[in-house]
Length: 86
Length: 543
Image (cartoon, each protein chain N blue to C red):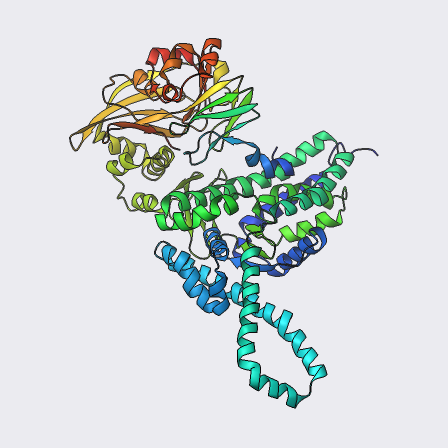
């Protein structure tokens, strides 16, 4: 229910962005701590139970510590893997 | 006091009418623009009664992008050049620092809209301030105390030099005021005041008087419904698109000059009050006002303020920037922004945003699709998977599945399909459709380069994606697994993998958790993929 005024106004401030290059962003909410381990590859260590939220996918419940990594896609013309963006 | 536990038939009718009223206001009355009388009355109330501040000057902007540029220009106003003359300052200082760099990158209508907003508001501000604070008061005093001949004599002998220095010093200070006032956002004050004085008060009253089931029912039928129709599907989508267009689609000059300076401080600073963002919660309490559960004076004023139909407001110490609602807001039957013929959202300065089934697509891509000029090369060149998927959705809707097969068939051959049959419990939160877990590998050649893609479907929305993979793979299972990456040293310790879009969440064993805390940076950066068998033995939830 998004009727809650404070929830509506603050939800994006309380969340930690773990997908800096993503258009819509993926946000960890409720974690004890979120550590950016690798700024280039966007690898994050999330400590504690949390949820992963984004605009265009179902919210993912994350039990305990976990490692957030980014999917790569292959570019045949550069013959390199790049971070997938959506 | 007995709580309201069930709505009467009449109250249910009012509930539907309330929902329709607010949706209609945002999505059908938008062409009328902001009701300036209501808005200005609301700003007076907000600043005077709630914030205990002076009434600010209101700058109306034709679109979100215009507004960001206007705020950026205000923030960059230079003291010295404003002192010389406002017209010169806008022309020279601001134009040189900001305007010239963005002029080639925005359309004429946006340019004109910004020019009008800046010129009018800065000039008016200086003129008003000089007249009100200096000229009028001094003129009265001199008029009362000095005879005409003395006044004329003094004016003739010292007038020219004094006039210039007074004018310049006044203008300097006014210029400071203009510039400083847009540095001091009052977002937090507005937030606190509205939350404390308005929202908390009505929330408590409704909580005391209405049972949970009625509250939830009204929230579903009015608050969430209006919120989804107005805030989620329009405001939030346009917000993302504005961000995208400034960040990605518009020229570097705009990004550098506008985005860098206003992105963090303005665009996402959440000084969002009295705009489409408020329609959900205001409509919710409007219903309880209409059926007599609450009658809160501050809420009633805030409601009337919201009814001015402003799309978005940025509040500063002495300035309020109000964005007119879009002229066009076109949706599909599912309530998503959608138009296959033209922009789904268009502001009056011709700023356009294109959407297919709620997904934003850049204007150049939309035009190519519409004009049948979109090629497989365009598809391959596009780096954003969501835009690729939206392009496919456009082709599918406009030209049908057969065209889509032909579009890819000319360059890609279907090689292999893998179906990951998931346990029922892992389908919770997905579409539970037949496409979940179906991966098909396609391979081909373009300009002597081997290409390969895995077609898959988003389990949350069933949107189709074609993800680039290395052509070395001959089966879809290994090919899709190759896109998962993890630090090499952690590979033996993978306990479980979950996925949300392009982000993986990997749970490690205890040994893995202990290891990661002491893993050197170069080991964290050393990523490898895993085999299809390894990947699909660990993957659980996919959204």
